[in-house]
Image (tube, rainbow, N blue to C red; front, side, top):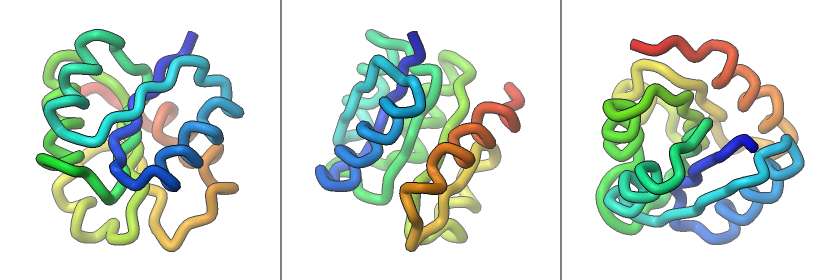
Amino acid sequence: MPQALIIEANMVVGCELSKRLAELGFDNLDHVWTEEDAVAMAVRHPPDLVVIGDEIDEGDGVSAARRICEARDVPVLLVTRDSLRVGERLTQGAVLDGPYSFSKLPETVCAAQNDYRPV
């Protein structure tokens, strides 16, 4: 059962990501709003994919992904309006640049999983 962790405080974006990931076969979805909650959730339910959005209530989504990947190698997908700013901080993973269409999510998830190379 593929497990995805969504780090996104915007409920509309988070719910749409959850819906689309479920359609792609992720049957276990965790959705968190803070860096600390993301790291703690990844310990309880190790994800097969981490999805980071632009909005987070506390901390930083990229930092959360780095911390999660220190403990367990996992592909990361960044869904953002500003890929240049965040992409500079994320050395691996796939980016779905905004404004984006959720219809591009399947190919981007596939790219994140296929291009994934543990460091």
